[in-house]
Length: 391
Ligand code: HEM
View 1 (cartoon, helix red, strand yellow):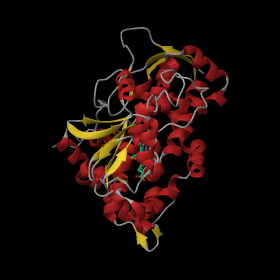
View 2 (cartoon, rainbow, N blue to C red; view 1 turned 90 degrees about the vertical axis):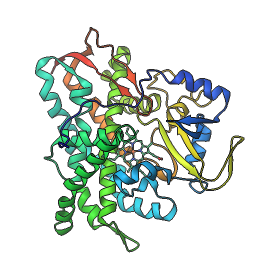
View 3 (cartoon, rainbow, N blue to C red; view 1 turned 135 degrees about the vertical axis):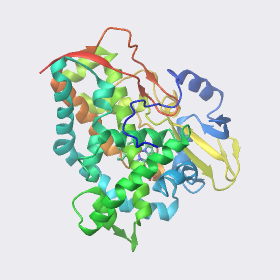
View 4 (cartoon, helix red, strand yellow; view 1 turned 90 degrees about the horizontal axis):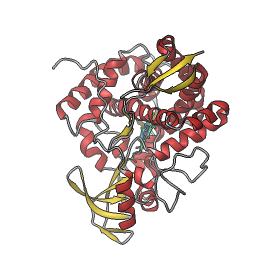
């Protein structure tokens, strides 16, 4: 097979424009129900409290199920680990993703990269912000963080897409996993011999309780980060831009008062969870909201549904950046809560701030593009053709 170099066909798996009406009906029937997910029987948690409860109870609900699909592609990753094993490995990796570290990346890394992307399209007075900005920024940020800045971004983006779409195109995903392995192997060896100030060096040399990450685990982690770093934040930035461009009065308010940006990022995460599901399996017989769960049964947390639970959020379908409401579940919860959440927030914040600084009179271009958010497993807008005056 030819190596993968491009693909801007980022499928969100499913063509649903608005899955939320069906989720509201499901929640009205029961917070938790037996259903099928991609053809397999599962117990789905649609309501916030139950989804949160399952994610937080790592003893009754194991993350092993995450290894079922991922293992042949990524190798073993922390996503599938439980208990102490997970704790130790997460600690080895986690220090690189602390909020203070993510904050230092904002000025020295994310803003300059965002400006460079805007430089590329600003003279035209028009752009397609999903393709030319939201899709391009996170992969560049991630490459800098792991310490291989001058890579072929299109190749990485191709891997990210292929790994995300594994359930649909298995051979392509296997090929992407192999290419990523072959790419990272010499980098890992080089960093172990000559460690620098980057993520691969810290993975190659870190040690906790006498445990070091072997090459397989480092590969697993890096291959997990390719889609986690490139795909998810792209969706957050895209959906936030969609929400603002289709609510121009909110866009004007944020432009005038940048202290509204953090609320805007947080509300986007609640309103359109980029990753719609998390999965667990029961370690023992249990009961969730009156639904009996048997050992090994698979549970699916519908994060997008939980985030629109009317018992928790007033007028949940409304995009309201001043909500200051209770936290959402878009980064999961419990022991496996997203390690990249601080980075994702900082990236969303800096991306919007730079666009507002550089692009005045920013609006959707009239025409037939019909921008809309789409997807079942993931959610993000199709395309955002815009016009602006560059400053
Ligand atoms: C808006 C952006 C993001 C969203 C919505 C998101 C979502 C999630 C969710 C829902 C989980 C929990 C999965 C589970 O419980 O089974 C998770 C875990 C994880 N995320 Fe993210 N993520 C985002 C960005 C990132 C970034 C930028 C990185 C790293 C560069 C990252 C790295 C990880 C890792 C390593 C885990 C596994 C943590 C563990 O198992 O302990 N994520 N993410």
